[in-house]
Length: 209
Image (cartoon, rainbow, N blue to C red; front, side):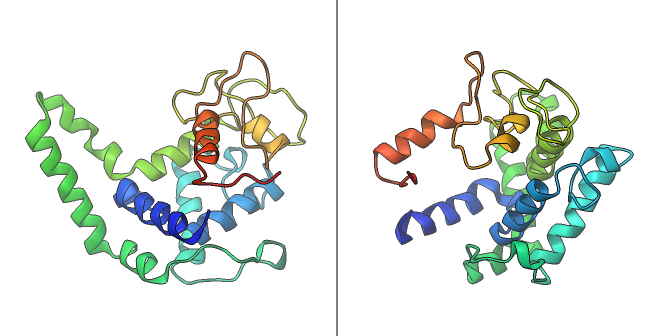
């Protein structure tokens, strides 16, 4: 992406993720570690080294905070020129900002909810990031089928991943981490792939050859 679209999506992600916004640098480091050490003791979030999904999520949180809040440098293999917007990163990490987003969610529900039970969905909105990460990393490495032997426990949880927009094709993704299409078999469908192709066609992004 050029500078304009880079900043646009950086800010757009902050607005849409709200309480769950993740520092891109910290997330990128953890993701690279996850691929390099997939399902080993050095993996930041392998479900095979934790007794339950809560313990895995808390471990991921601690590692994330080290790289985002304390700006710890990763080991040499994972150092790089990561995206940064220091002002927005600082603002997004403020508790007052996260609480403001939470208050906006509550006001939205008060205005639009038509039944009391809808308010039970509020915790999911408050913690969408941890929910998403827990589902992808736990289910994507425990449940489903494998197309490839990747020397790890990665699985394709769903042949049509309508829940996580393709991210539950973990086995395919670990086989071809640079592929923009996580679906590999004829019966698999990655909903994010056509969106990426449209963004490339409209020149908002430029795919590498």
